Image 1: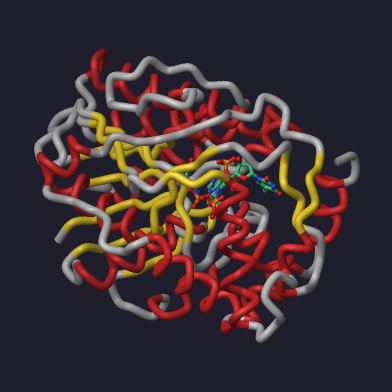
Image 2: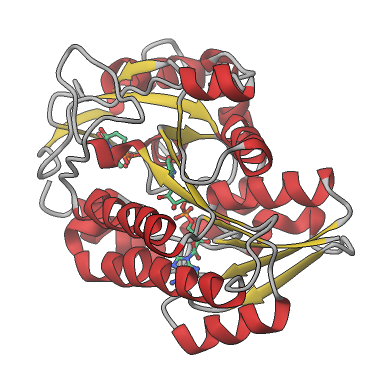
Length: 350
Ligand code: NAD
Ligand code: TYD
């Protein structure tokens, strides 16, 4: 019996990781710690909330006293740390929040793990989930490997880069058994509609303008979220402490091509005349410091741990669009209340 802490388990990726772990490992006790910010939603975990090996704890990783007590109470064997402020545009509006949660919150967790694992690190692991955005921006050529130098540009990626450095420092300085993975852009069910794919699905559905930043030429490498969760499972169980693993889909799309593909799929699904949704495309002021291109080389993970993506992108995108169209109540729930305020504020000057 192992007790595993998953932070940020009520968020997008975290909820998929919690579901996978709870279902696949009945002999693990999974504790999901989440503050339930705007991005955390217990409705993401309805199907597993009554499982005997699952428990939810509401709390803030920035509160060091609370974190210390939690670790003393549960004596975790492993930590999978996903809790974070995760949206680049929000980090441009409010960078400090990103320093609190992503940097200080991570250091609080590292301190607590170090404290309870002082005498025996055997079988223990602190697994920090990070992003490819720490590596900066690529030009037309090149690909991020595990040894690419860090060069973050947004307050979000700067805060994630900082937290990655702390994790490595705790491994090197204190011998904390820790590892990191850096993943490319995820898509799939339960993603909050502030990120490109769910935002545009929701806007197309409601015939609202599709705000494309700049010329839509930026490139992202998209991975289905359940493939990310499978990679996290593999790395948590077979990865080596002190190592870094890149995770990506080898699936690069310019934003504009991706958006046109989404428009054509949605025209078909909503029985609209071909070309109808594309008319909603509106080019708006570019994001400040907008990284041009991300692309991940995940060959280390593929060769060492045998992981590879299971789903082709077009199939994954169809599945994702179907999920958002079918789960009307979920979408309505997360786009009511403060969401309108957020949306108006974020897009008012564009
Ligand atoms: P998300 O914004 O959907 O979820 C974040 C979760 O963390 C939410 O449930 C929120 O309530 C919780 N949280 C925020 N602040 C907290 C705090 N102070 N204390 C406790 N809980 C708190 O994020 P996501 O997209 O699921 O990303 C999860 C992790 O994966 C992040 O660390 C992110 O940097 C990383 N990541 C995301 C992507 C992506 O494409 N979304 C890609 C690579 C890496
Ligand atoms: P996003 O989903 O925010 O992820 P990230 O910035 O972390 O890669 O954005 C993906 C791409 O889509 C990015 O190049 C910015 C662009 N984008 C838009 O053009 N319009 C939008 O309204 C949003 C949210 C993103």
